[in-house]
Image (cartoon, rainbow, N blue to C red):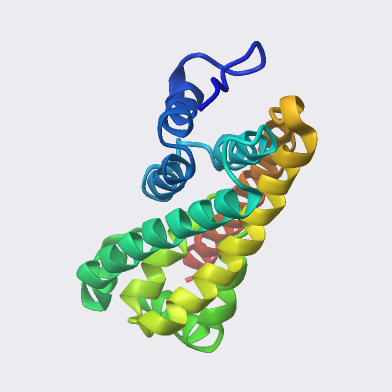
Length: 212
């Protein structure tokens, strides 16, 4: 395979590790990197997926192969986290929640009820949201969502997400690294939104305790 490294690529850190995998293994390397990204979120999908697309644009792998391998990696990584949730189990989650400050078991009950109604949509859309991409698999396992249903929604959501970013890298060619800044902005917005939601929850609970 022709060497991918160029002036635009980072030579060290996670980006360098991912680049090395794709250089040495091609499509399977991209799939392995995506599977690891599910388990170790510091490995950035905004590097892996556009890089796979760039590699395809150079002819080092097919575009269909880049999308297929990365989607397979997404499903494998998500399935591993699903079984983490299965092992963790509903009762253990409730026991942990009971020990957390400001958390009530009624909150867990409401979350379980919500997931029971919307679990499929949560998994599908969760696969297209930074941070939640990995985390959504754990509650699916805790709630023992049917494996077939989980795999269906995970595959569809991952296929859409991966196709968008692989195609971006394919289209941008040597400028594929530009994708990282846009995804980074989106991820920061998600983090800010989560922080605001947690802050609002804490304030409401503290006010409730004072009134009590």
